[in-house]
Length: 123
Image (cartoon, rainbow, N blue to C red; front, side):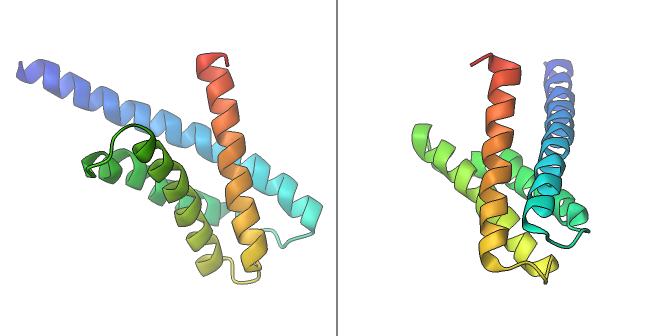
């Protein structure tokens, strides 16, 4: 029994890192496109990395302990990721307006969700 639990724990951590790398890759591409379109300063890629690590930890390791189920948990995950990445963008990327930070956060998460669903579920 302990072997199975250890295996599942290792598998969970592996899936977390694969998902994190996939998400960072997609969101850096989205950030690059948004930055070119809006003529924003470069250098927000580190911010995207920090925001993804924080929101990923929140979604994978904190939200499951909340007393939420079904759609409430899904919405908490979605809005949690958007708000954490928005806050990190505002806090670190000082030259970005609050509108650009919010729009970028929403667009990054929407594109990641769409690409992830098409890639893994074939929707």
